[in-house]
Length: 252
Image (cartoon, rainbow, N blue to C red; front, side, top):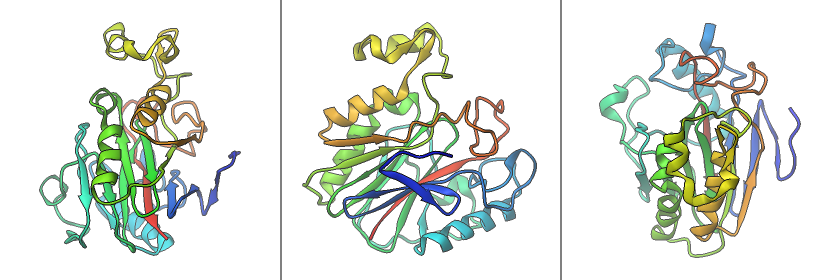
């Protein structure tokens, strides 16, 4: 896996340094799951064995050296503000009821790593001088401008300096074919978001980040759909029977 700066290898994964912290985009390597979820599946709402997912999450947490903060994602635009040490449910708690519902997290706390999950949707990290955020950005979230909400969250919890964003592995314009009704949703972004019948979610994300005031945006340039299958889970490629990789960020 070739990476261009500012991205670099980290364990089996992809890392990038933020102004006051770090972000990591995981691959599917280095875990304990089997079959279509092999090997580092981090998604509890998949049909994978719960004990494997819990073991995978503990492995990642040990590598990060800080507790991971979980949410239950709903393809919305809600961004959780974490400004006090959260009461973390146990790993075997019921996912549907125990975890807060949101599609992003922002924090100013050191020693905590907010996390989102994806398997074609764009995982995006934002960092400033005193806060980090991670966001799960599928087309519904982008249509609702979740990235503007993510930047707003970072500002509200106290970071008023320049911001940097990193777009992790997700569906690329090479493979993300959609119907005309969805291309119409993003028509205001101009012809650059269309590649034949395909939609470029990364162009949309970059534009939203710039509109929200993010001065520096980097894209790892990896499509989860056509990348080597042993590297990334892909909901579209694997027809829904697949695991989830993660994006997480923490202050250093």
